[in-house]
Amino acid sequence: MTGVPLTEQDLAATSADAFARLAIEMHDAPGVEETIDAVVQFALQALNCSYAGVALYTRGSQPEVAATTDPVVDDVYSLQINSQNGPLVTALRDRATVLIRDTLTDDRWPEWAEKVAALGVRSVLDVPLTTGDGNRSTVGVLGLYSPIPDAFGEDDEAIAHILARHASVAVAAARHEETMAQAVDARKLVGQAMGILMERFDVDGDRAFAILKRYSQDTNTKLRDVAQQLIDTRKLPH
Figure 1: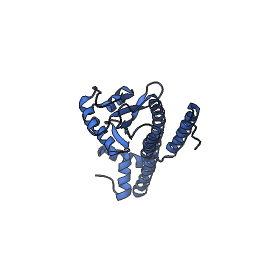
Figure 2 (figure 1 turned 180 degrees about the horizontal axis):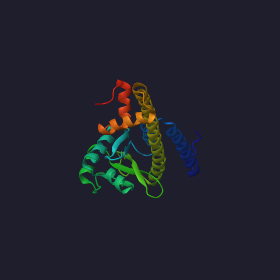
Figure 3 (figure 1 turned 90 degrees about the vertical axis):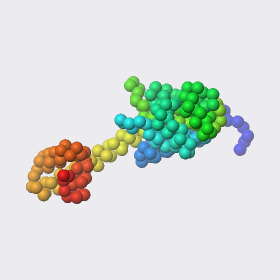
Figure 4 (figure 1 turned 60 degrees about the vertical axis):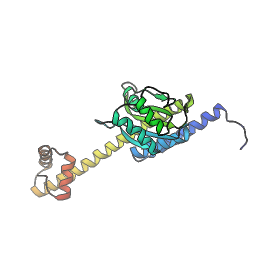
């Protein structure tokens, strides 16, 4: 160690290098869960927070806790998800960053703030994860927490927004890859099931697919699940 303080240029280079490593780590993550874990662990290293977490929107339902670095964050999230009230809900709905400098004095969500302060959380920074340039869609929220009042400054907000942008793209990509993988898997299952029907009933591919589709509609079961049942049991659903 030389004892010479880092310049702004040194700090910028260090941050750029750290985000580059994070981008590679998220890109290499096998799924959404691993991607989010990389995000929250990086937040602990790069930001002035003691706890971090990510809540993600799932289509057609309320937000779900995707990753947390401490059980305290699970409590902070559950208080809001259950009541549909708090900075997390606001950040998701309005696609806006929410900063709480001190839960003991902030009066926007008094009941929630009182409970969170009792958990030892004084500073909160919720940053939405959004995708798209025009009609932005909210993927989720990155939440940062500290037991120290007024813990998050302008630099923390700037870094948090960069991290949120990285996370948004990575989560969207991971979800797309998982969806594509599921679609490929479904096609394979349906193909196998069609082969069983073609061999058993001496029908062509079109007829075999029509049989699977009819059973899917009549039993209100996904085509993939009908195919899986036929493969597993060699029987069509009743």
